[in-house]
Amino acid sequence: MAMIRKWRAATATVLAVVTAAGCGSDDTTEHADGQHVSGTVTVFAAASLTETFGELGRQFEAAHPGVKVIYSFGASSALAEQINQGAPADVFASAAPKNMQQVRDKGEVTTAPVTFVRNRLEIVVPKGNPGHITGLADFGKTEPKLALCAAQAPCGAAAEKVFQTAGITPRPDTREQDVKAVLTKVTLGEVDAALVYRTDVEAAGDKAEGIDFPESAEAINDYPVAPLAHAPNAAAAAAFVDFVTSQKAKAVFAAAGFDTP
Image (cartoon, rainbow, N blue to C red):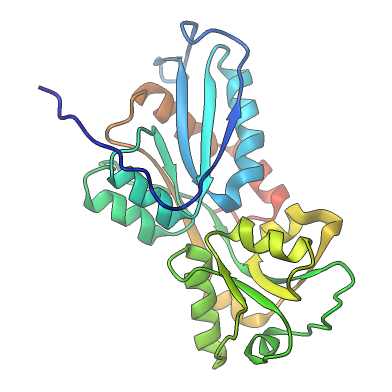
């Protein structure tokens, strides 16, 4: 008898983005390896993948008529917890190997995850840099208003590593649950500076400016992806992982500022 798995709602807020295929879920298409792909594929993905996965979802749906991709974006730590509590999902794309390992330890991932992109932190400031931020040392001062990711989120863990490398004790005014929440604080002018991924600075466009700092090289995040062991749609999960690790997908990631292996 199949084990009934319960999903307790996680406390973290998760942004769900649905990209509609416009066709019924009964339609099927054939994957390159001969598998038939149909229905819905549910992907839990790090918040920093919002823009790129949105684009890849549209491409995946176009390549597989009748298939619909549903995303839940959030902090990888919160997503891993939800998966381990039984949240129904097909694919997990994490911003850090640590959170992927948490899922593997619970038997929710049984195939080797693939590192598909890498990312690094960048200082982000509102357009015009009203706080006159010049570098990482400003995060140790009391004057500027500063935002960081929560320590358990991959962007927060990476920030702690660069501060340790630089010998700086940060003085954030706020810690947010994921990198997109941090970026919003900057684009709304609520803080003078924050640490986010450089891809998020790119995604902010003319609403923000980025400042590179050398210590970012000490905390480069690998992003692993894997189909989930209890995926409701295993065939679509495998097809989606194949797609986001393809050469076509690498071009999308590179354009967004990710490093690709």
